[in-house]
Image (tube, rainbow, N blue to C red; front, side):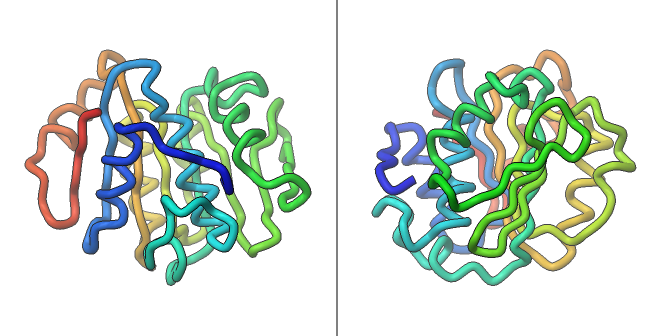
Length: 194
């Protein structure tokens, strides 16, 4: 994360995260634009603000005031050991500063950092009951999500924080188009298309 330089689309989305007042901030766009990679970069910047690149030199990243519990939810394919999420974690997380745990999964599904963060990786195929549990401060969605998981995930944000997402295709869960992306941008909900 020390050497991360965002592309133009990633920078537009990061600027919206930095702008005060946001709560739900989504990045929509075509394939191959680095949305998933950018999502993991933002996660790494929250976890290790002291070593993150100058892109993340703002109070949002430097003075985290919410629970240091993150949940990144994605498609099963993206969570596989050779999927885009795991690959980005290996590239962006600082070596020897986190512990990957499988927790009964076929891939690392939980990460504990030396800065006090606990990060859970969850799949869209998991039951919504598995989303229940602790308050989280950072909820990250990679690709459109099932509505029941969305509702359960939002319920975990009871102590505040950020809900961030990166998605391309809306064919599998079309409710996202009207339920999130189709709503007008507001102070708390922001959608950028890169």
